[in-house]
Length: 351
Image (cartoon, rainbow, N blue to C red; front, side, top):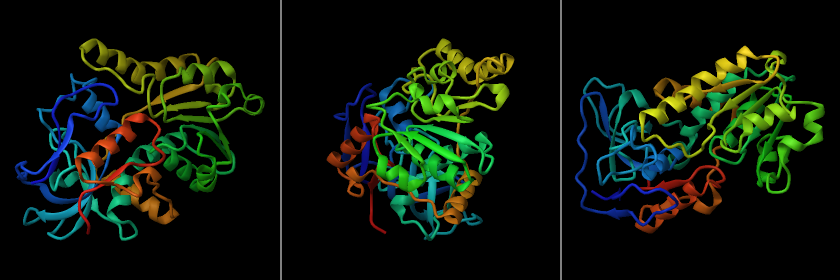
């Protein structure tokens, strides 16, 4: 079958090791798995973490491997007593980094698949999956309708633009965000867009005079928690202030040793405890890991449809990249740039 292969793990925005070939063996499914004819794949930060080799202690696929974890496709084979049937169109998340979906066929566990909603085409369906992370972040914000003020760092990214829509749907009183995409984010529900190339959000007098209840960081790095805490733009924990880290201190984490895992766990588990111990000095710090399953995907799709939320594809995809070596390389170049506006999608086959 035709598939994209990565032949070498290499850090940096390097795509020369990605090629599309037509002689890869078609995968075979196990019980409780689906064999799926792939229609569209959305690239993700997770794909870039694997490809870079930075997290090789825990993400170390056998070379060469097929990338792509979030996809939409047509069920070709399933168990006799499966909840799905041949011909169903499904949204799927591939949890095994060795068995990606930028290929004509892929397999996925039934526990990580749901029926494609009628309101979405395969491309927007594949692109919507990272909305689970945005939904989880907004859940942790515990929005009080008409009262909660929120700042979203990185509003135009794959998680950021969905976060803004969830916040608006749940009645946030005021939503500010950092981005260069002013018009797009105002249409999605933001009240104010700060151009981060011209202004630092932690220095804005308006925000210091009326601090935020919540900051949701979808960018990471930049000492954002310290800047939020020391500048006074986010309320202290005792007053309800909560810094929710979708991305941690390092947006490109290195996990190549046990020590690096312990360091990461300290941030995820230790910092929230530390901020609660000095709740009168700093905001609360919340970190989480999102591992989507079918239940979470169903809840995501339900809220997207009920609230008529939009799935945005980066306009540079026009509207999606082709399933060729050049197309896949361009998709990864855009994803790895860190400046995608919405999701990056590759169309593998037409429905």
